[in-house]
Length: 341
Image (tube, rainbow, N blue to C red; front, side, top):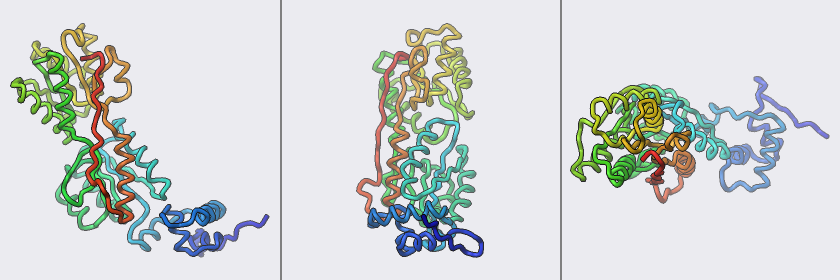
C-alpha cells in the first residue's frame, strides 16, 4: 500500500494544500469540507477527512484568520467554572460547535466586568469566528470592542428584544416571581430572600421576588438577606442561622442558588429547625444533590444544557450569514416542587 505524499513547507508543517492534493480537490473545497460547510458533497468531505487524517494535518488558526478575516475559534466567556451550571452550558456548546470545525475557548470572568474586558481584548486580537457571552452586564469599553470588531455574538442566560441582538436564555425575573408565588400558595407570608455573589442574574431574581410580594402586599425589605461573598454551602448555613436569629417569624426562605439552599437545609438539621413545618426552603438552578437532600429541595430547573446547544446553533447560523427566525429565544424554566416546601 502506498504511503501518503508528505510535501511540506520548509518548516515541516503539513499544509491545507497538501491535504487538497492528497484528496484530489481544490484547497478551497478542502477548507470548506474541514469547516463543515454546507454545499460540499458528502463523498468529497469524506475524501478530505481521510487525507487530513492520513497526513496528520493540523489547521493553522492564524493562517485561517488571515485568509478569511475570521478564525475557527469561538470564545465563551462565563463567570465561573466552579458552578456546575456553567460547566454544563460549556459542554453543550462544545458538542454543538466541534463537528463544524470550531474550537471553543473558555474565558472565566469571575463576575468582574473589568476582567471580562481584558479577556475580550485578548480574544478579539486573534480574530475569532464568533463569541458566546454571558448576560448583558459589561463595561462600555467592552461594548465598543464588540461593536467595532463586528464579531457575531450570541448572549447566554438572559434575553434581549433589541433588534440585531441574538440571545438564548429565560426570564430570571419571572423565575424568581414563580418560586415566590409557589411559597405564597403554601400559606407562607414571611418570605425571606437570601442571596450571595449578587451578580446581575441574582439581582433579577430578587426583582421577581419583590414584585410578587408587593402584589400580595407582603413585601418587607428587612427580609432581603444579601451577601457579596461567593455562593457556597457554608455561607448558606451561616446566612440561614443569622436570618432566623434576627427574624424568628420568617416562615419561608428563597435562596438565590441551590448551593446556598443546600447549606441552609443542613444548618436547619443541625439547629433542629423543622423543614418545611417551621420554615419552607427553596433554591434555584436544580444543582446536583438537591433531590437527595433531607428533605429534597424545591427549586427551579434552569435549561443550561439546552441554552448551550441552542446558542451554539444560533451562532453557527449567524456566522454563516443566515437569517435567524427567532433571535431572542426564551427556553423557559421549570418549578420542581419537592419536600422542602
